Figure 1 (cartoon, helix red, strand yellow):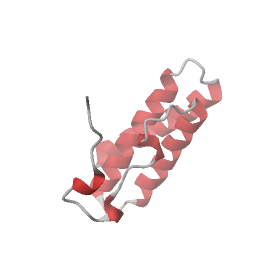
Figure 2: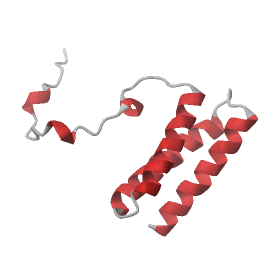
Figure 3: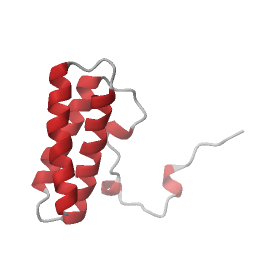
Figure 4: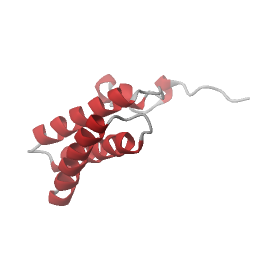
Length: 97
């Protein structure tokens, strides 16, 4: 029998350190939602021009979301086109980091 992990058992008691967002909640998202995550991550990465580590993290996340859309069997041509743009943006930021 497994027991759930008690969140208060962590040594990190700073509630603002919870970086889990809805993309990491274990939910299954639609292709449209995944494309929106890619777009949001690209925008966040661009906004993190003064923090290379944060920029790289969001660029990797955007790349992952864009790749998911590119491989989704239900993605429309337009969604794939936008995913390709986000993929290119993310790869450029990763290469420049």
